[in-house]
Length: 173
Image (cartoon, rainbow, N blue to C red):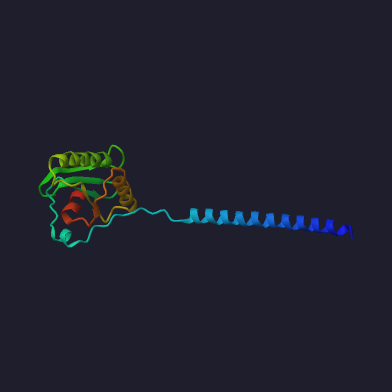
């Protein structure tokens, strides 16, 4: 009879050790699945969509203003940009490249110019970028120019098809 309390103590210790092991393993499983879920979430880029209010839809887009820059994406990482309309541009079409001293520098300068004018002219809003990838440009070019938009803090842009005149301009350069 004296041995019975000792057996219950050893049984209690064994049960306690088993419970500690089970809890530890379950915590490891929870941590493992949390890490797997975190690592498998897709990395996506947010795209700002235009407003669909009636007021915005009734206003025509003034392509001759200095608030819009058109960026043409061509083959072999070619970029041509101009400000205003192609027929009478404010800044004539220029060839540039991706990166800090390329299109990013021009976007930052144009955006800074718009912000300086907005303090003088209350009607001035912000820079609008019109991105026109050609049929020969790659998907990587489009992602790269969207990255440049994010770096230059330009949140108003549109991705549209290029016109035949712009296709000729890309082919000529």
